[in-house]
Figure 1 (spheres, rainbow, N blue to C red):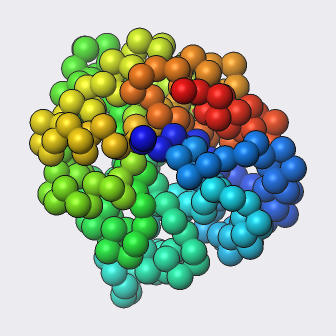
Figure 2: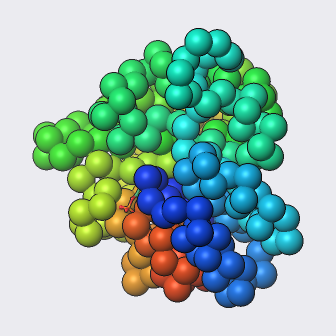
Length: 256
Ligand code: 13P
């Protein structure tokens, strides 16, 4: 059975104290999770150590990071390596988020190197893909997302795919309040799974969690997670409020 995952991407939000309070609130309300229904929390780097200690008492809630550098180590002032994340007990790292592609000019080649660094250091990768509005309007989103996946993942051998989660985040839905419809989400997730099956095999594609991200909230999580190929969500804004994030987690726990 493939995993269902709800992952929080706090982005550049919350101070240390605010982050600690939020995790305490989550702790109080967290429903029972299992190894196949898990939560990931990806705070800013400075919160990692603190969040790691707080998560020690929580079953099946894992620590995530929002990025890692594409080189192993060296003179890269201000950057954080995959080895550092591993030493901070990070289990998942978000790679290729559209905000980093846009604002930090991360290209496909850099993203592929980040994937390699993360896997080489025992981290699971949440690999983000998703199209801008003009691509959706031109109805070429399938080709666009397929090319992101090819460039970022297809150099990997099949055995590495166990540690990959894909997050489909249409850019026009991120932070806009405009969620993809269940049909749009399901169609793209099915397409992504067929792209993985064609390159690897159906077994690998079946086992891969594919998350949806983009204005996911308690009011739409249940219908999104009910889609056959939607295995959970990567949550931005709604992950910053305990009540909302717990509502989304509950929708995942209730989903078949
Ligand atoms: P929102 O949930 O705020 O739309 O953000 C989604 C996202 O980018 C998660 O990585």
